Image (cartoon, rainbow, N blue to C red):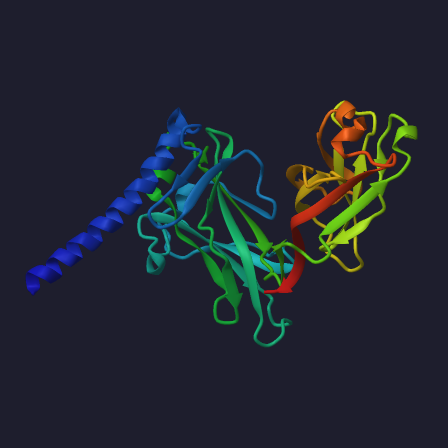
Length: 340
């Protein structure tokens, strides 16, 4: 049993060593001229480190003669700053916050302050990004863990105990302390829980899904696109179109506007577009499917048969100088906003 405990303890210590060493190695690789290769650095603790040129948006803190405070255990607490509609201070542990895994690291936190006016039971959820400036690269190292930070009356200070290894930060060749000046920063953005989600569903064989359009006086029609009346399938109106002088007599399906109170979004439409044979079941049918933009009048066309075959009375498509075009809407999408 003692041997088992010793083994587990050894494994735990080894894991911590590897975790810290991995983060240090990755950062060193970036600062030694290979930053482009290691643009995104992720440690075993789930911290992600990414280089950026732009300055932090909410707070920048610079401390000169940084080596003077290197070994002080107490933190430096910054002045108050505004971010995301609340008041904050940065809390910097130059020698690491020991009770948060910060041994041999620099630790940095964001503390929410002046919360007395907030309602009872308040909670502030934020996306927290903390920054370390590297003068050698003239870039900021962003440190984040991708988790929503939940501040409340019991938890007012959150951040990263292992912001950056001390062996890296205090190495004069790595560029984090240019002329013994350390610069840090923060960006804090509110994460509001969504109350609604957009849900897209597909309806097969929707009600009233067949629209038939009989076009009279075919021989007198001009060389242009003619359009039918609108018909409603799903939450959207549609139109058929065709060109009587087209070489293969194209048929078009147009997405139009939406019915009242519908959610206006891109709409999937799958349809059989059909030139009907009026003397037999030898119809000319072409399948089409597409994501139709929410803009009205967007259409997609298919070719049918040569115009000469349409005009040939023996074929059965043109009867009494009229043709029949049909749209069979097989599947359409409907978009709704529903409670989460």
